[in-house]
Length: 538
Ligand code: UDP
Image 1 (cartoon, protein in one colour):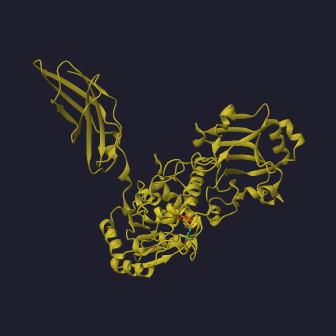
Image 2 (cartoon, helix red, strand yellow):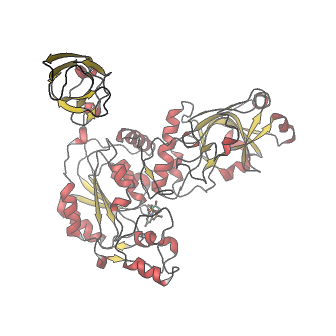
Image 3 (tube, helix red, strand yellow):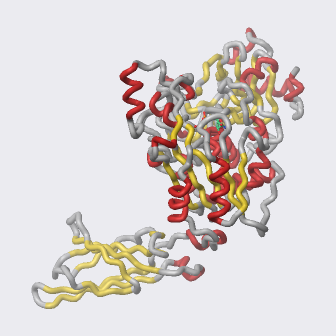
């Protein structure tokens, strides 16, 4: 029965002895449950109790040792979605002596990554919550290599996109349900529990209306490393010299339709003089879609999860997101945020249907497809009259669902106009030099010299050397920012300078101590660190 696991041979008696003598050992990174990932030796799982088990012996280790704070609210988040109360991980504790009375343990020999998928049927969630975080969690811990095995504990079946999860490791991922077939007490020889959130860029609106995460830590470079890996696994090669430019329209076929898709395609082809192709999840394989998108000049689609495929666009391409009537594009920005991550080098354009004539509503559908027939008459009236969905929390706001599941006849002239306003075809940054985004170091050897004229006037001459890394870089523009602060005051005078020295005379008083802060700026927006503060007495 456990042939799934038998690819790596382990010595059963040695494994059992390690468990009995050493118990479970856990060392975690992260200070809070929301940023914690734990490494375990001999973590067990009872498939009957559906609980993880920590066995205590004299040799066990539990770091952090939180006491009952481990339940406030949990040891860690199993998914990459922050602090969601359906995604918490914990274990129950037992002395190793209890093993005598328990089912014989079955050992999992592979290094395991134990985690939750958040919503495996929705492509945006699949990439944003699961695939990218799993990929970079595996990069963080060297023993999570291609021979390690993923364990999905959220309890879903494989879901629509299981093939994508399978690309991340050479071993078949296992689902919670399948663990039962392996044994009653499973013990993971070596495992990591949790998921890095470092690559996520969006919060779905569980505690405040949805929007970009407050502190985004990922850039286009890391996104492209991930897509390169996925494309290699999918056997999709990047055509370096794209022969012909083309536009991809990613269509939905079940709901939120573009009603005049044929007309749209013709108009795009004509306007941009490019071949225009449609794809949909229903009609095309994943690798086919990736192959097309990875060489496209423009991706046009209704707002919706399929737009996460912009991940695969080449640098310089454009993303055109269409929003149904009464849906404010500024309030729903997962794909805008993705396209505009630093270094993604995509041009993002939002278009919204503002003409009520061009929308088709479905008040009689089930509530989860936007129906509103279950609401009282006054509320239905209000929703139908409203011109914009007010900001709201996830996930069942009926007005939002009603509006987002409308079909739309796209007003072609207004769409072409907004695209024309932003899109520069054959754009610049496609082959940006890697020096493009490098920051200056500190300025060096900063010095000041004061001179006093009479009792009311003084001058301060400040000089410094270029940052050490500048001599190795080609930088278009180098500027210096200098702040002059009188000691004890909390305001300062800022200056932007082009040279490595300057004499300040404005507002400089004699017999006063000034603090001088200096930093270098490359190309207007790459701000370096301030050098150690300089103390200058006039
Ligand atoms: N989907 C699709 N075609 C459709 C409708 C939905 O491929 O006509 C996909 C969509 O891309 C997503 C999943 O089905 O992966 C769930 O769609 P839903 O409308 O629930 O979510 P949304 O796209 O608004 O995030």
